[in-house]
Each structure stands twice: as C-alpha cells, then as structure tokens.
Amino acid sequence: MKRTLYLKFLLAYLLFAIFGFIVVATFVHGMTYERLRRDKADSMYQVATQIANTYAADLYNSETSLEAVHQQMVALSGYMGGSPIWIVNPSGRLVLDSSRVLEQNKKDVIVGFDPTVIGTTYYTTGTFWNTFNEETLSVFAPITANYKVQAYVIIHEPISKIKASADGFLNISYLMLIVLFLLSLIILIFFTELVYLPLRKITTATEQYAVGNMGYEFSVESEDEMGYLAASLSYMAGEIARQEEDQKKFIANVSHDFRSPLTSIKGYLIAMQDGTIPPEMHDRYLGIVINETDRLTKLTNEMLTLNNLNTKGMLLDKSDFDINAVIRNVAESFEGTCLDKKIAIELVLTEEKMLVNADMSKIQQVLYNLVDNAIKFSHKDSSIKIETTEKHSKVFVSVKDSGIGIPKEDQKLIFDRFYKSDLSRGKDKKGTGLGLAIVKEIVKAHEENINVISTTGVGTEFIFSLPKAKSMDADDEE
Ligand code: ATP
Ligand code: MG
Image 1: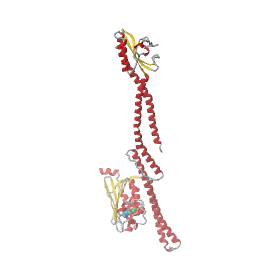
Image 2: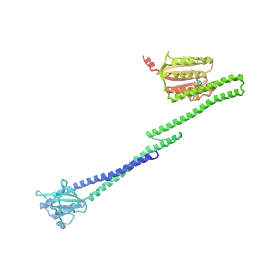
Image 3: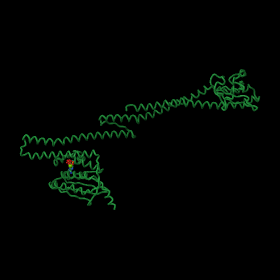
C-alpha cells in the first residue's frame, strides 16, 4: 500500500481546490457582474426618471431655467459619484451635460443618436455612438411635456467601474474559498488520524505477521471499524501463535512418546541378539516388546482419532439413542478387566430408557475413555459408579471412582494433550495422556460441558452433559 492512499486523498483535495477556484473565477464572477450591472441600471433609471419627471419636465414647461437645472444636475451627479447626467433631445443635440460648464454644452451633437436602440429595456452598453473611449452603461428616461417626448435624461456610468466593484465581490469569494479550503483541512486531519494512521499500523502489523513475527504487538485505540479490524487482526495473530505453540508442544510430546517405547524395544532386541538376555528368557522379553508395540499402536490410533476430530470440524452423526443402553454396553466390555482387579461397576440409571440426541459412537468413546481411566486409577476391591440424572432438557452422565484422585493443580491440565499427572505414572505406564483430550473435543463439539471433581486419595468424578432427545421432552409434557 505504502503511501498511495494518502496521495489519492491529497489529489482529491487538490482537485477540490482547483475546481472550486475555476467555479468562482468563471460562474461566480459572471453572475456577480450581471447582477451588479442590473442593479446599477435599476438605480440609475430611478434617478433618471425622477429627474425627467421633475427638473427636466419643468424645463420643457418653461417653469425653470437651464442654468437652474444644470446646477441641480451637477449636484445630483456629484451625489451619484460623478456619473455624468445628460439631457439630449431626440435629434441628438446635447442640451445639458452635468460634467461640463453650461457654456460648452450647446455645441455638441451626438452623431447617429437613436433612442430606439434601447428597445424594451431602458439602457444600453457601449461607447454611446463613439462619444466615450470606454464601454459605458447609459440609462435613458424620456422627458414628456405636452404629450410628446421632448428629450431624454441620460445617465452614464463606465462599465469599468461596475467591473471593479464586481472584482471587489470576487475577492470576497476568493477569500471565502480559501477559508473553506483551510476548513476542509479538518477533513484531511480527521482522515489522517482516523483512517490513514491506523491503517498504516495495521498494514505494518500484517507485514510482520506475514514474515512470521506473530508476537508483533500494536494497538489502534478507536472504537470504530478500524479499532475492530485491528483488534480482530491481533486476536487472529494471537490464535495463530497459540496454535503454532500447541503444534510445537504436540510434536515434542509425540516424539517423546514414540521414542521411549522404541528405545526400550531396540534395547531388548539388541540384548537378545548379542546374548545378554539368554534364550530361555526370550519369551518374557518378547512379551515386553509386544506390550511396547501395543502402546505404539494405541498412541498412533489415538492421534489419528484426535486429528480426525480436529480436521473434520467435528462432523457429528447425531441421532436419538438410549444413553442407558450405551452405558450398559461399555460397562460390559470392561467386565474382564474388572474381574482381574476385583472392581465392581455400579449403574444408577434414571428411567429404563433415556433418549439423548448426540453422536452415538463418539459418546461411546467418551464413556469408554472415562471408565478406562476410572478402572486404571482405582485401587483393587473398589467400586465405580456410573450415574445418569436428568435436569431440564439435559442428561448428566457421571463416572465416579474412589481411586487415587487428581491433585488440584493438575485438574485444569488433564484435558490437555499428553498430560499425565505425576501421581498416575506409577499406576499406568501405558497411558498416552490423549484420552481426556479426545473426550473434551467430543463433548465440546456437541456444545456441551465436562467437569471434574476430585480429591487426592479419595476419588474422582467426571460429569458431562448431553441434550435430551426432543421426543423425550414431548413425553415429559404429556
Ligand atoms: P490414555 O487415556 O491415552 O491411555 P491417560 O489415561 O494417561 O492415557 P488421559 O485419559 O487423558 O490419559 O488422562 C490424563 C491424566 O489425567 C491421567 O494420566 C491421570 O493422571 C489423570 N486422570 C484421568 N482420569 C483419572 C481418574 N479417574 N483418577 C485419577 N487420575 C485421573
Ligand atoms: Mg485415559
């Protein structure tokens, strides 16, 4: 991205300024001038008609003298800022000119004078039949006496004067434009602060993450979309970092768990080969080797299960089934082991049939792992209780033993992959520490919970919940 977004925004800003300037210089200028000229013509026309109806009419009705009218015109002209006031008769002879002394007046004749050129308007612009060197606005007001147009009162104003005042207005417009332009800098500042700088931080962060620096920390402290984007991004990076960490731990654990059985297998085999272990002892040690390979097979299988659970995003094959039947089934499959250890499994099941909605084979695996642990970590001559209870729309399944228990500090960790408490190591050498991780994944996929209650030396209870089948709820209501 680099700096292009900012450049684009600056370009837009400059375009705004340039177009603003063009608009003011052309349209605004033209419009102001037009407006001023009309206003000027209007006000001049008012004065001209006033004169035509009063002093000038008096002149033609022979009620006043030319000198007196001239004096009035000079005064009026001065009052109007020096605009010359003329009285011209229809033939073009200049009767009176306020800008000159009276004696000089009588000689002038405007060659080609034609008052009809004004048409329906009451003014004309131009050099007034070559009388002036510059363009002039001339306003006409007819003087009527005895029902006849006797002459015209004509007031002149150089166009350059009107243009000058239009320019004065234009300067105000330019000033406003500059003020506006400066004010719109606020937008630029906001853009920089709220969009551009956070975006740069985010981009830098993504670049860091892209090269694998997942620990890169940054913060965008705004509560808008930018802040949200930044927070999501840094959360994502955290998750990836955590997963990477997990992955590393997982590989380390797997290699460790694979290496120890392999080392012992190799050790026994070499000892048998070089005669350190006499042939009559081979049977015994081959038994150990087979045990170790069993452990490796178990480890591989469990890892595959976990991997499948993870990658498939837990495709659950849910159905309504009787959890009591599944519990009985699992208990039966442990009969042999129980007989060896003289452990009794006691079932306390609510109702004859308890339908739940879940993935049956996965729940079976959960129960299998829990009962397997319970038996492994129980003392001889003890009992294990499997219980179901029903509460609202849930069924709670509890597997309780009176075995070695789990130390408090380990209770949070036992669901982690490969975690085995030190206490249990003596009791179970074959365990991989993956059983409860699988259990947790399955329960989580069902959007249910599993909890452990345990006291060292007293026993352990695992309780997990399952959703009751809809048909069961309907039965309840009947
Ligand atoms: P695996 O199940 O893969 O054979 P494992 O039984 O050691 O190996 P988990 O089932 O994940 O692994 O259990 C993890 C650890 O939690 C056990 O090693 C043990 O320390 C502790 N644990 C689990 N269940 C119990 C229990 N019922 N009583 C005492 N400790 C237990
Ligand atoms: Mg286990």
